[in-house]
Amino acid sequence: MTVKTLGQLPKTMAAVVCHGPEDYRLEERRVPTPAAGEVLLRVEAVGICASDLKCYMGAPLFWGTGDAPGYCQPPVIPGHEFVGTVVALGEGAGEKYGLAVGDVAVSEQIVPCWKCRFCQRGQYWMCPNGDVYGFRQRAFGAMAEYVLLPAGAINYRVPERVPTAHAAFIEPLGCSIHAVQRGDIQLGDVVVIAGAGPLGLGMVAAARLKGPRLLIAIDLNDHRLEIARKCGADLGLNPRRVDVVDEVRKLTDGYGCDVYIEATGHPAAVKQGLDMIRRLGTFVEFSVMREPVTVDWTIIGDLKELTVHGSHLSPYCYPIAIDMLAKGLLPMEDILTHSLPLADYEHGIELVHAGTESIKVTLRP
Image (cartoon, rainbow, N blue to C red; front, top):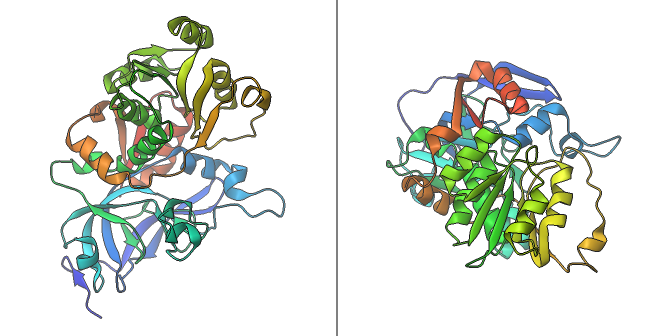
């Protein structure tokens, strides 16, 4: 088997390894050798996602409850928001992905099986057998000096006009774009995006391209609302300062918003949206919740006849995200607030958990 490499590679690397909730360790691991169809990246930057935080904190979705297994399968290297330099190509990988040694590249967060009914229908992002980087042992993540992209991965070359540090935001921006697509925003709609974290800010930028009449961001942090306006929001509302449901109704002749996208991860934002949205409106649920959400479903059916969509991952959105970053449509210097050495991963997790000083935190292996 032929492997193309960028010079002599080391035999070992530093890697953050998840062994359990709040049990993450910096360890020395073997540098993988790519087999046929595989790509090896030297990681340039990897983001800490809200789902990484929830995994670290032991959220039930990731770790399960009782005898029910969770999504995370330790020991595993976390990290699914990443960009890297191609340093080795397994046989056929360069031709398959249009990559050469030395290119900067990213990979969609899910590695599908390509055999199930969803994959066969082009709905690969819903593959029940697929692995998201950093949660299962078949697809180790990028909180390490090197990451292996398996043969079934979906990889893209990053053009030179996209700064490498910005390219680590392609994954979250892709997720934001998909959520906006699920909202089916029409020209002239009033759109509310709840949550102005990294994903919510990406949603604001993507929603701006849809031509809404009024684009409103909601967040408890005034600084994040300022960044949301730079991303294209017409208005930022802080629930600590105003009754946001009442305010949106006033702005819409009492009807409510046309589209509401929930990106806070807090149950209160779900009820807020159901109260705020107009009859026959569209509600998009994006967040991974830390706890169950209880609402009166009568609002969805008998009272308002809402269209409710979920949003999962970023199918077919990476090229759009790359184009948006290449065109400078987001204030990336405001969004990428912290870049830390890999060894400072615990501090990075603390920053994301607090959410007061940071927006997007990345690690530099």
